[in-house]
Image (cartoon, rainbow, N blue to C red; front, side, top):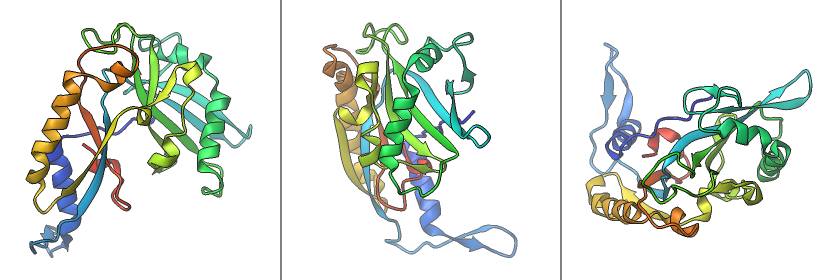
Length: 239
C-alpha cells in the first residue's frame, strides 16, 4: 500500500515553508533555532488544478526482480482493493484497463532520465462520476479515472511529463487537460494572495470546469495547489 499524501490547508503549507526557510539547526538542548531575518522567505510559483468530487484511487506497479516484470495492484486512499473487495468499482475498472499501455506511457514520459528500472510506479487520481458523489457536476457521468499525480520511486513527475499520462479511450483522463491556474506567492507576506485564492476557489465551486467539459453543469469542490518552483515540489508544500 502506497498511500497518497494528505493535502493540508494553506496555513499548513505556510508553516512548512516557514520552517524550511528559517530553520537553522538545534541548540544544545535539542530545540530548533530559527532565523528571524526579514525577507528570508521565498517567492514560489504554484499551479492549481480542479479538485474533483469522487474518491481517491491509485494504480501501483511494483517491479518483480525474479520475473523481470511489473506487478500491478489497485488501491483506495487507505487500502489495497480487488474486484472482489472493491471501492465503488475502481479495482474492477483498473484490472480491465490496459496496464501495459499505461506502463508504456510512463516509460515514454520518463525516457532515459531515470537510467535504471524504477522499483515502484504510482499513478494517483480521482475515481469519479456515476453516483460516487451526488448533487455535483460529475454526478451521472460515466465513471472515469482522472490522473492528477504520478510518482516514480521518490520523484513526482513534473507537469510536462505528467500531462502525457492518459488513455481517454479507456476513460483514463488527466486533470491537466482541463482549466488550471497559476499564482505566484510571496511567503514573506502570504496573506496578500488569500483574496485571489478565495476568488478562484469560489469560481470553481460555482461551476466545476471538468464537469462543464463533459457537458454537465453543477458545483465543483475547489482547487488543489501544487508548488512547481524547482526545489520546492515536495507534497508537504501543496495545499
